[in-house]
Image (tube, rainbow, N blue to C red; front, side, top):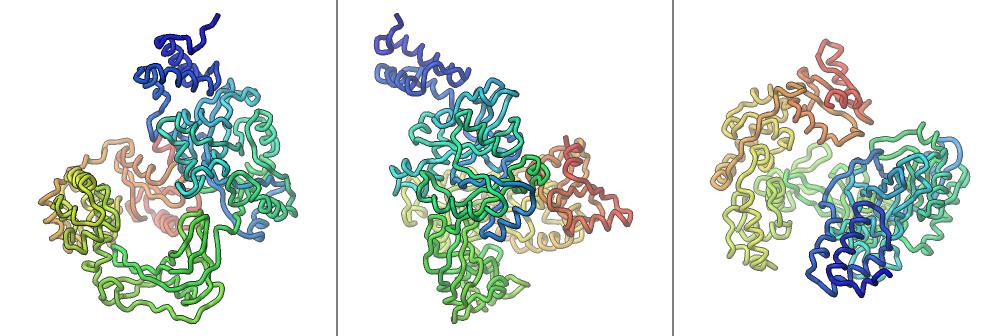
Amino acid sequence: MKKHWNDMTVRELETEVRRHNRLYFLEHKPVISDEEFDRLVEILRRRAPDSKALAELASDVRPAGVKVRHKVPMLSLDKCYDEDALNDWAAKFEGDAIASPKIDGVAVSLRYDAKGRLEQAATRGDGVEGEDITPNARRVRAIPQDAMALAKKGAFEVRGEVYMPLSVFARYKGEFANPRNLAAGAVKQKDPAKTADYSLSFFAYDLLGADAKTEEEKLESLATAKFPTFEWKKVGRDKMQGAFEYFRSRRDKYDFETDGVVYKANSLAEQKRLGITAHHPRYGIAYKFQGDSGVTTLVDVEWSVARTGAITPVAIVEPVELSGAMVRRASMHNMGFVRKLGVTKGAKVMMMRRGGVIPNLESVVEPGKGRVEIPRKCPSCGAPTREEEDFLYCTNARSCVRSKIAELEHFVKTVGIDGFGDKLLEQLYESGVVTDPSEFYELTMDELLQMERMGETLAAKLLKNVESRRRVPLSTFLQSLGIRELGRHAAKILARFGTLKKVGSLTEEELAQVHTIGEVIAHEVVKGLKQKKHLIDKLLRHVEIEKEAAPAAGGKLGGKSFLFTGTMLAMKREEAQALIEEQGGVAALSVNKDLDYLVVGEGGGAGSKLAKAKKLASSGGKVKIIGEKEFLKIVK
């Protein structure tokens, strides 16, 4: 007769824990339920809390940040906010559409092997790569671990949303902003056992690798295989708005947050014909509930000074709730935007949090009577302002308070000194403790302890963070100076001269001849290095500049230069540029006579770069205009 766990010795319990842990996490062949396994572990924990077998349970935890490349990009949906835009989208395909609630959860990919066993789970990430959450997904009860019914033709993939039911979130109200954020944190717990504590749920919305001709067939197959699916409707072109109204009316009845309705062309043949852009599939759209927008009153306009001296308008409005958050401030982009919309104080304005993140003032619904004055003096330092097209600048940016604080923030972020937020930087600057970046390296414990809400533990941590950044690569040092036009790529190119002294000795004419630099960048760099000489000298008393490895000139690409226009589908532009440099090529910054390749991605067919490259090529220039596929053949 089989022994009950309560009757086993500690050694026997350890053997059982290890066996079931192996069957579940490594062989994917569990023979007991999750509840039974948890009971077994708890019995061992009570009997032998220091047992090594309990520590080994962490073996199912994969290293944080492990990336998974999606076989098919997990693109986000395009959005619309009114019936006309929805109908414009629907006119692009033939046949019915499938409509369903847009669930505000965490998009995940579930890969199953040819025997229908869950093999890998990953978050959507940036659409191209996600994060491995396989052990965590095994702890979400609504996710089937076996789905033999769908494995008729081999391996397959299910996509859906992990979410926290509102009934569960009620336990955490007051502690967390919304169920989506809590679900995102829960599904990425380093200890997967903790994921189970959050009672997450799951809805499936897509099936890849199945023998289906319509979205309708996919959803029916998922339901047959015991995957939870959402309520959905098949609608014709004349019923689109009706489906939206139906799901909106049921919004308060669902046990999950929904912020709109998703529509997809039902025919997979039509989906294939429509294709995708770099950002979204053309065969689907999300019609957002207008909870993401609202009308309120503009109280005032504040002007914020950036590191470059640019002065940006910020709308101060009567509080309005957007996407579950009370909004009192919103971006207005630049001075030209204020003039274009005719913004006035007291105006009724349309606010929107597109994507549920950054509040923007979208339009003026009803004008007010108070005039918005364009500042003639910098709101931070009082220096005169100047206008350049749509932008407003402080003419005394070098010593402007807000600009100086932004300069300090740019330095710590670029160099990688963690812990110095905006409020602390403001205190340090206004108290005279840190007035330029070199003074971070002169900070003392006593000086930090004078700041508000500063304790010894935090102060010690900040000093340690500063100390860890006394050695920096040349390109990082150059970028950290905050010189206009001297961004990451230009800094990388300049670092190839080997030393800061050599870079500083170059004239505008010499720099302008450097491939991809040009006259504008050369002018700003030479001028900026002269203006920053005193700061550079002070920094060099504390910082050691590391020489960077020379590019692989003998690599596969042998100094060939590449410039991109449009959006890459297979990888981010930064990744493509890094790949070029790894193989001895050059990531160019502009079209010129020395350019070897212009790579035209999605949406890049009507830009100025392409027009200029065509003109160069027609006049005998060496530039070759290629697509992304040809580029991938060259680098791979």
